[in-house]
Image (cartoon, rainbow, N blue to C red; front, side, top):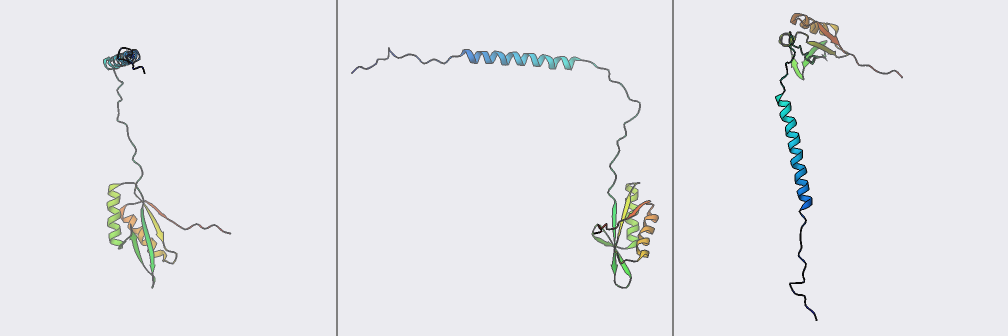
Length: 144
């Protein structure tokens, strides 16, 4: 039997040339990009001056929805944002909304069996608050 000695073993070697090539490419890349950044920062530009401010339009406010529900005996009660409200309180709330937004809109949803005078009372509250954008909704059904 023949045993190998330490003299016959070939040395294991890792080639460093590809890693050195990659490092040189990275260094070159960073040198080139930093010179561009430096050039952009050194530019002095005189920007044009605009004589007036740009006006940004705000989106329209969400309309206030007033639900008029029928009560037995020809009476009605009013709901705004799922809270029962009286007509004087409705006028105050609409006035506050008008102060916050000049173009505030109101949508009246009247029950089918409610009397017209109850819907007219909501319109009167809108007029007292100074709101001119008032609309009423109906349910649209397709005829068969």
